[in-house]
Length: 517
Figure (tube, rainbow, N blue to C red):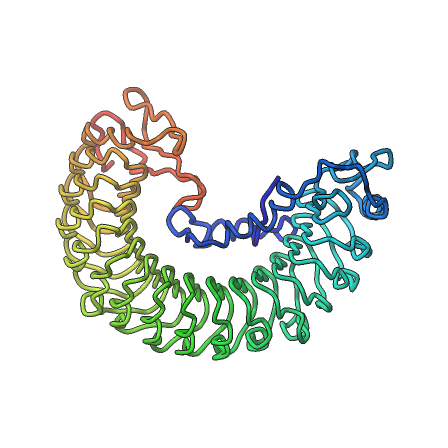
């Protein structure tokens, strides 16, 4: 049985390809650990594994009759659930159904990914003890029936990846709500009347067409721990009312049209672990109050309007492990901000800015916790410092699309943990150093569109010899015979985001071929 899912692609509106290219899908390097995935898993699986009844000596047939009516309601139930039939004494062992410990009442229904078509059933309230309802990844359409609001014991509702809209009345006890990827066109004020979200702990409305302000939500839903409003059309300033939601642990507002500054009030969210404000129109300075957020480990401010020198505040966010400032207009401040001194940094992405000058040698002194460093798509010039070979724990190093010159440092052979090395689209010269063959974990190397010359070193084909086959499958590159390109499979869930392969040039052979034609 599939666990509870908040988000994902919608087969109807074909968002999958966009999601696969989005930064959050690059989960191998950007995944944040928190209690929420485990919490949501427990919310959904406990009723199926802890309260599934084996004692069926007594059963109230009214619940069974409701389920049989449900089966006949929409297209898809009949052939997907043949076990649902009137000859069974109790529905407690039917697929997707869970009952209380006495086997008297249905407490949970999971019909996710069942290819069901039609409007939502309008008599769920007859299941008086229903607590968990998962109808995600189907083809339901229309509005949310008022009847659902009459399910007084319902605490978790997942309708994601359908075509459902409407308002919420009577959901006063609901704690978990996922309406992501439904194409909802409405405002939060209309969707959530007064008191309708006062007990919500987890709310996911991502990948819809929700408009307007979010101040209303922060005034009403003060118990929220996890809020995802990403990929909508929300606008206006970041509301200062965010301080009302002091229990927030994860907040994702990426992919909207928010503007102005990030308010200092956000610093009052002392439990916040993950903050994503990417792909908006935020500008000005980032508030100093972020420093006091001791639990903040994930911060994404990419693709906004921040610029100038990197603020010194970023060099003081020692609690942050994952920092993304890409896609802004920063021009300097890498050294003066002391961002290279962050003690716990694991992933740092400064790509797609306007940094210029030499690559700072100080970067080589970054914490041994650093696993990912992305400086691509800037205006860096000069040689690659040989000291960068000291980044022994780095798994991803991307210096591509700059104006770097000189040779590839032999010291890169000391990058014992490197998985991806990207140096493409610079003006590098000389030969490929044989020392790169020492990088036995290297999966993907891109040195295309440079001015390299000479032959491919024999040791270069040691690349990937320590890769675990069950984790990273590789293609037989036929080194001895007819190989003309070096190919490596890249897992879809990792940094690149899709299966890729590297071509140096069309004329490379595997035995001493020239880099140039």
